[in-house]
Image (cartoon, rainbow, N blue to C red):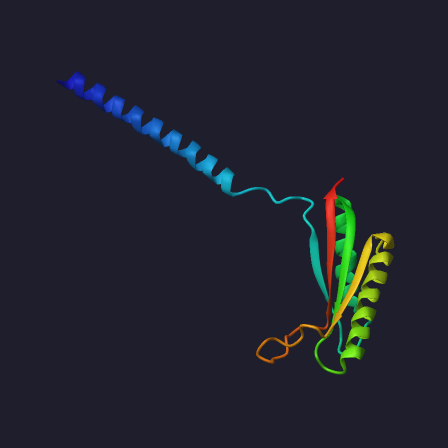
Length: 154
């Protein structure tokens, strides 16, 4: 009777050990399917903010653009750059459109100074289009340029 109990206990311990080890492998495999390393060359998006009625890139904005350009070029090949100038709803629509063009051009110039080839740029301007939401409220933080760096592996 004692030998049978000892063998049963050993077999039970082995079964628990096998289940535990297989459970670890299952958890690892499940985690690997869910958690993936980030793609190194995913497109980078940054927003550069401006003072009211200004198209001058601030010192902080220039620092963000320099860092983004250097970081992107170190890891990837830049295949294109989209720059969209925006304004808030203050002022006449025509003046806002012109200001948004100037903002896009100022950001492109700062990116060129940071070492990006100007030929890869696509500039556009929205002016104050979309600055007011459907309820008639002004959208916040519209004095900016949206920049997308399209990246590919080296």
